[in-house]
Length: 158
Image (cartoon, rainbow, N blue to C red):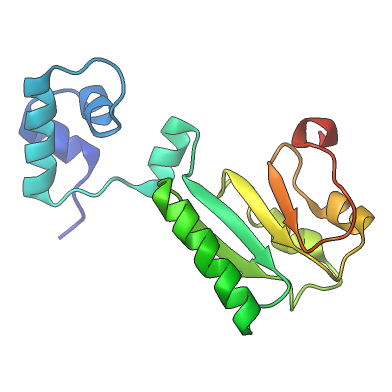
């Protein structure tokens, strides 16, 4: 059986798709009775919002990209644990990638994050400041850790 869609929830709750979206995303004014009907229908159907569709409609992914030079070792494990704890407390998830296979093309790794994350945390001690700045996607906020030099703000990089 196919996964339930927002249309299925709207049909069961007898409301519009827009009302379902507003109710589930806590947007706009939704009457309490409508919100309850939508939540009950979603629960009954086992509806889980599609992350891609939600990020398009809200223009937010609720994800932070983390790019490391490698993922082994206690140092990276502890840093990741702290990042994950802080992100989770704020309603974000982390998407992890590493550059160990892309030392000659760091832009390829960073480019894969574009459109999937709201911001980046980049650890790139093996790259020069110029290489990092060239590789960062324009208009995507980034924090550099354990990296050389300073990089301009996303607005200055576009």
